[in-house]
Length: 460
Image (tube, rainbow, N blue to C red; front, side, top):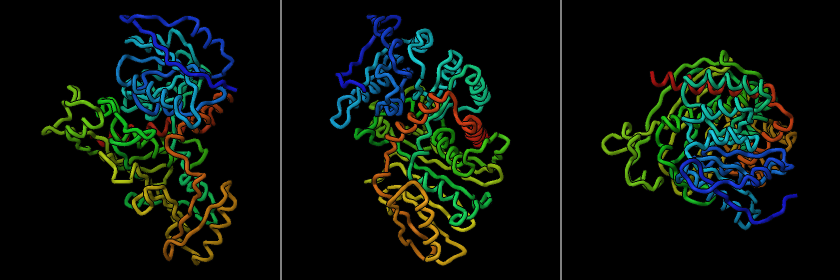
C-alpha cells in the first residue's frame, strides 16, 4: 500500500542549464519494487496528465518527465500538482523532471523506466515511437500515433519491431469504455434484438459515427489553455486523421469484435476536409497569445485562422458501409460539450446513440426503427437481452411508435477524463501478460491505414 506523503516536483536541466539530477533519485527509481515506471516525454497535450489522474498499484509514484522548457511542460506539471493536492482521493505522484533540448536523447540513454507515455505534438510522435521501440521500451501513446500517409509503413514496421523486442505498443482508445457504446456493441450481438448488421450503401451506411468537438472547453473544471501548435495541422494533424481515430476504432471494435482485420478489408469511397475559421480574439482566448505565430501564417486568410480540423470519410470494411465524420467548433452551446452520434443498423432495429440538447448533452442509447414484431413484443425481447448483460437497473422507456430508450443509471456514467485511467489499467494488464490480444495489433495497423488513406484521398 502506498504511503500518502507529500509529493514533490523535482527539476534538473539539460545542456546550457544549471543544476543536476541527484543520481540517488534515479537509483531509487530503478531499485523500486514497482513493476512499471513511467517515462513521460514532451507532454504537450492535457491527455498526458489524465493518464496520471489516478494511481495504479503496480506503477511507481516516481515519474520521469523529459521535455523542453516551455509552457507545455509547466501546464503538465501544474495539472499533476492539482491531482496531488485535491481534497477527494489525492494522488501521490513525484515528477522528476529533465529539462533541455536533448530531452529525448536523455530519456533513451537513461532508460530510467519501462513505459514511455506520449501525448503531445503529433508531428514528432512517429519518430518518438520508432526510437522508443528500438530502445526496448513499451509505449502507451495518445491518439493519433501518426498523422501523415507516408508514416504508415513505418508504424507497421514498428509493430513488427515491438514483437521482436518483446515490448508493447498501444494507443489510448478511451471511447471503448463509454457505457452507451458498450451497450450498443453488446446489443448488436443479440440476434433476437438486433438481427444482423445490414450491409448498407454509400448513401445510407450501415454504421455512422459523427463527433463534434470544441477548441474552448473545461478540463478538470479549469478552462483549457491549448498550445498554439495545436492549431497547426502539420503538428496536431488534420481532423480526418485525429479524432476520427476513435471513430474508426469503434467501427472495427463493434462490428467485428475480436476479429483480425487487415488493410485489404478497407475500401475507401469518398473523403473530404474543410476548415474551422478562428478569429484572433478566439485564438487569444484559448492560447493566451495576442498574435498568430509565424508558422500559422500559411493558414491565415483575411486576418482569420483556417484550421482543417474537420473531415469525413465513407468506406467499406469487410463489405459493410461505414461513415465517419468529425467537426470542430470553437465553443459549445450553453450547458453543452463535445457530442457523439452513432448508429448501427440491424435487420430488426437500429441502435442509436444521441447526445444533443434533447438529451441534455448526455450520451443516450435508443433502439429505433423496430421491425418484425409489435412494440410490446420487442420490449420483452429487449428486456431479456438487457437482463443477460452484466449491468443492472437499466430501464426501458417508450420513445415513439417504433422506438425505445434505454435509461442508464448514474453509477455507470464515467467521465471522459476517467476513461484514461481505465485504458491505462487495461494496458497494465496486457503488460503483465506480456502481450496484446491477437486482434489488437492488426486492428491498429488497419485503423491507421484507414485514417491516413482518407487524408490522402481528401487532399487529392
